[in-house]
Image 1 (spheres, rainbow, N blue to C red):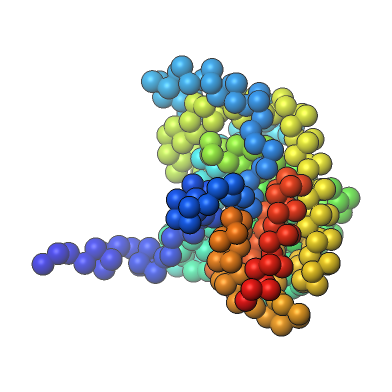
Image 2 (image 1 turned 135 degrees about the vertical axis):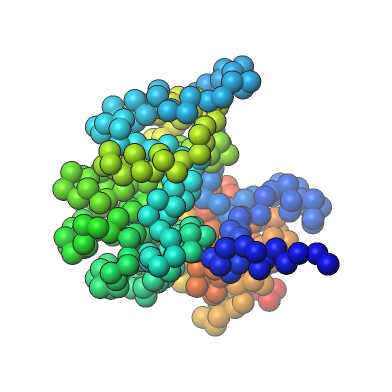
Length: 373
Ligand SMILES: *Cc1c(COP(=O)(O)O)cnc(C)c1O
């Protein structure tokens, strides 16, 4: 008799569904024998990597027989200069996903709860449940977070609130005034995570920079990443900025050497590649416009986004169409997008902003796929 390992697992883990990543290009090419597949599924940077980051990575490769600098001294110092915070406020992670997990592990356990919104980034429920804590999921408003409802949902056992600003996969964002009213209401023993994975793309005067609230609210943690606008998704590096006290706690649960030598080197280098970041922003702004106009022409409903992706409703002549079928149809045409059923958006798909030619290819095949259904 083999052992029932599922029964042995922690209660939270037993009920967990693994994160579903976007389909890799090679996998689709293998499966369908296609060439020239376009992946617009994981909010990756369509520009490819920064040359400066690649060069730094190459040079760092020589040191791969040594453990990385676990303190991330150089990267933290550089971030500290840029962000005008102390290195003692920065926690480095293997992607910001790692940091979100550290926050959950430091503050959540059975008997405690975390608040996040419907349609919010799917890593929050996974991180919360893995710790055996209870998720309090609040209804969205116009696809975005309803901060009034979120504040009211906080219970005595709540220790963490996760806010994605902008949110993935909806691309919605929270304004300064809303955030300020919210922070004023949250008890000081509740940690507020401001997940700013797409901060570099946002160009809105009313968008709040989470760092501005650290001084007034020591319970705020801002998380950011090198995966999106900085184009280092494959290297896995992100960070949290918080009070030194919270930073100390996160570092207690952080695995030693959680960020690789190459990732550290590339992140330091890309921070100096202002042209790359500027180009990332420009290509993204143009792509958002191109996709939005394309959807309008096709009569497809889409959610206005300030990220590097857009979620759209799968419909034909105004009638709903099964998103799974549209997803499959697009795959057969060599275009990978992202189903968002796990985000409680079963009739939507999310497309990442690509290069102009990639967006055009998507907009060309989408009506063909819909037509064939
Ligand atoms: C992509 C993303 C992240 C982080 O990704 P990492 O690659 O782990 O840094 C975090 N939050 C949101 C909302 C995201 O979309």
